[in-house]
Length: 499
Image 1 (cartoon, one colour):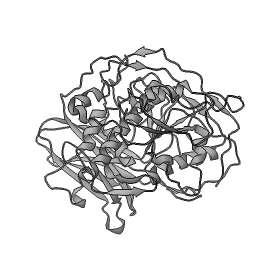
Image 2 (cartoon, rainbow, N blue to C red):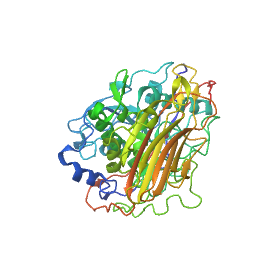
Image 3 (cartoon, one colour):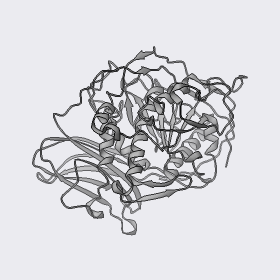
Image 4 (cartoon, rainbow, N blue to C red):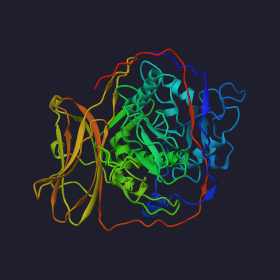
């Protein structure tokens, strides 16, 4: 397979914000999670992670590469770092700031202790192979607070396929930042299987960029947002939240999950911590309406006219602002099978998830999955269905994108209450009011005429209509940062895709 050689690397225009003292944690449900769980709150313990950074200087600079966090920083006391690529010539302030929010000793996931640090080009080249290799040090989550573009569309498309393959085959969750303004920067926010992150104020790039016949414009981006003034800061907050969910799913093992997979170099990955489940739980748990103490910006007009995406999200905010309390409750409620796969006839709980390893009609699998329940009071349902783009585990990087739909059927009224049926995205989402006493079916349906077999995760929460979390102000150090991008050169290689 082709090796990518970097000819140049650059920083995007600086988008620094003034240093401020504020606490994002109350705004995203973490303070409420602490109140709920106390000493039992997950910390990201035993979750191994990777931090990928663009160098602060270009490849022609004698100081290149400059990308790594300062291992002597007080935020990183007790952490173990590895540097598989060329050593950083000096610490990067940007990497320090990102790391502090991702795994630092004041971060939500302060229990993370093993970090692999990569310069962006080195990370890309580490995943270039005919077949996937085990993630270095068994990493489960990678944070990418950078954006960029390949030297050719062929290069860009290949890199996106490689990133998507890492998620699908290694359950290696990729949390990636969008640019801080409108930008043609498809790396890595235009990948299908990543979790793309924006800002609650909406000041980020919207929508996927056009690259080729697979990675087309118009797909919903970002997936979620966080209350920060730069996407460099918002992204590690979501990575940190993901680490808490991965820890919860892993330690819960078969008490929360109905199955697991063995991943080379990682070990057992339970259904509650799979890439699709974590993504679905973050989307279903996100706040569609906010009341922030950190930023003046709030989400007040979710899915208003002109901002309704085909997959049930808002084209500015995705699923909304990350809420770790809600997403934790979804994972902690445990896996609940569809009726077709042996689920209980009494119905699903107010929160929960399901990972279906075989769906689509082939080999005896079902083409409809039914999750039934009755609303005991007026509720608001948030539900997210996530599945991965398939990428072949060979040098061809052939792709398969299946079409799944999500529907809410009111059994009492015999009407379809709402549905999400995008033909270009790999999530479907509902945010809909439920009527007291009505019985419902939450339905996953195939959008294809032919049969196939594929896996998906569905996550949901139902909350009383009048329930609202009021954030409490507190003090916390907030850094300022900017995204950096890079470019590639190299002979273009044709990449075949299917679906």
